[in-house]
Image (tube, rainbow over all chains, first blue to last red; front, side):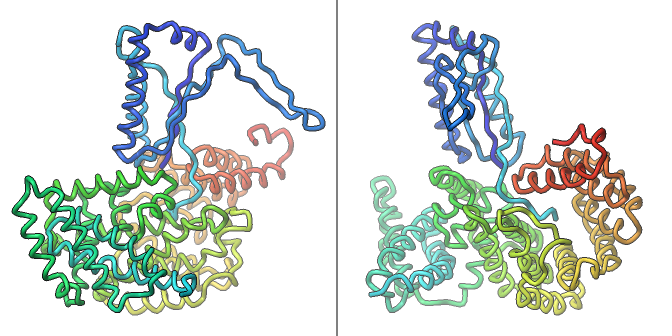
Length: 131
Length: 425
């Protein structure tokens, strides 16, 4: 079963991250790289992406005559997706354990973090027999 | 040379030869992981060369030779620190042609491989991947495609599975008679899981996933030919045939699920049903009746009903009662509740469902809500049915199932007075 592990943050969180020291950022980036490598080695990796920061994020809706209506002024408190992993695991518990590892990515001063990781099942295209 | 028409035949031949060749190579080198890699490489080479150059005179000998050479190369590449093996391997190479001939141990080899790949030391996902590759002869890319994961991830999963086998020192031989029956159950369970994984819509990108059901049937047939007296092996094969027979009727044009009662029974595969029924009829009198045979018998009762209304529910209930006495699987209890409702009324079925509330293995499963919704609808409680169809839709991990459950809720909601529709989507 597949799960998506989503790393969310407010605009304030993104702004804070931008002010980390060079060392802290390097440690965090190294952790993320190593983490993806571990998921690949474990045979559970499906996909991962980091997303652009919310500075340029837009909400788009269908307008008249196919002209898109965009909206780009977001409040500070709004949560933004920073990035995600998709893993293929054998139980929800295994997905939670992987999410907890991601949550512990090092923060300022190399201190182990505990950012929230939202875990949601990715729906499959098949249904089991129910036997 | 016309390559196109040859390809399915070559694929079929390669898949058939894979476990036989692998058996020979493992026997020679005693290194399952290296042998398995070598056979996969030999297969890939054959898939490129045979369509171009034509079939070799003895395809099996060709594959075995290539695989032997690959293992030898592999061992040689490590020869600096493993000189002894290298020399042994070189000697092995000289005897390769003899080993390439079919031998009486072929049948055992395929079984031994299945026992290895489905060893309880492996997780189900690892066992499934390894079985499909080592016994089924599928490529890593094909398996990755079937499970919608990157090829590198599947390669890693297979390689870890082989490492586990290596670490746990599982010998290349049939299990002892004492543990044989239990180990055979593990094999059947993995084959069942492969079948289940492929049991899906026949639409669009899911088309290839359906191949997993075909593959599961093929592998189970192989086991059945080698263990013709095991009634549960026959039972599982019959269950697969009788279930797979309904495949075309089970999904609509858009891939939507069509429940048994509404399926177009003219689309059912009569030939497959006949084969399943014949197999089951020959097996049941042998006496050792187990869960797969009972589930096959239930599938047969459904398959033999000309219409949904003509279904022999008392017979199905009797079979579920037997199954319940034999297995502590809460899914059995859940399905039994439906049969109970069909025979003795929805209220009786709902009473059985209530008993499942305290079973942590299933209490939160979407199917409990789905069954409750169905029984509430039968009982005339449409409000309650809508609520549980929606609850089930929120819990399922399957998109076609969610769509089906939401459609059920919507169908009932539209019949309710507007004031009662608040909960609907």
